[in-house]
Image (cartoon, rainbow, N blue to C red):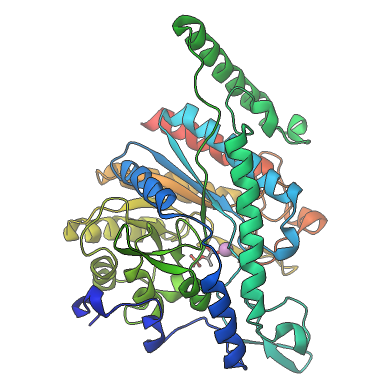
Length: 451
Ligand code: PEP
Ligand code: CO
């Protein structure tokens, strides 16, 4: 049993003794070993100081004192590692966090699905088109999207390219947030070209004005400048591709603990939560705060065993449960799951992913999500936690700062017929700029009205 394994038996490659789902088959083991060896020598992407600071913020969110905003692409692509795309994503997350801070009157922890969200779980290992069968595309970290034998062959060198892209992304984001881009004194930095046309623009600018007025008032009364120059911004991705995570996992003697240094806050996807599986084995040994996706298929005993395996010391900030049941199923499952976790006596941070239980296909074959279902699941999550005396401490969203047409509905009234005009996602449909801002405003309004 997982529970009986002592921490002492763990090492970054001990997952290899377990059944590892959702992993590609590399033909050339020597090239794979070489890529892992190179990655293990390269400097880490994040540090344990940042990771521990985030864990403290998440512990505050567990106590109801903060709120987590986690968002970004379903799958990042190497081609999108460009200044525009990164800045747009940062801008929308900063704007949303300002709206949430105003509405919730609590600190907001900002986490991007960024700088490493390059590996995707797939429902089938192989894909067949016109009689040709090739390995499924598993994300840019593993193989390439075009349907050719060469592109679909898993290539270990792509892990190095992914590490480099993640590092370029983090470097740029850090420079921006440390350098003053995120300064509350200058929210005009985060304006996007098309904000003026948005139905949200007026309310957003009213909020910005109110922040500016408050800052000005405080500064004139106290005679001190408010230090709003920099903000914290953290990275996260699904810790799916275990060779990549393993290679950047280090024992830090000053902390006497292991850390996965590819990202601050990795999560375990819904398809890889088997108790005896490789992912649980890997995650139990690292000291990062971690998320676990919880869908309708997770039973009570499995959930309790997962919590025991992943957070045996009940460490504050360590464990986040990301529920993703779908608008139709949340009422049936969330109350049960809250009771089950409460019975363990463990602290967790509850957050709601209203995206992944609400995916559907249109008659034309577009994968989409309805804004109404996303909002319904979110509102239900707030209500059910409140009724249970629990706290919904955050949201996990797939979104972009871009003007895409991937999810239907929202104030702009996007219809199925509009999807073709700017459908760009590599995998799942994302909220566009307007829809993401609208969700932030609706959350803020909902919490203000319902407490
Ligand atoms: C995802 O977050 O992109 C994802 C695949 O989610 P889940 O594991 O919840 O299906
Ligand atoms: Co997704």
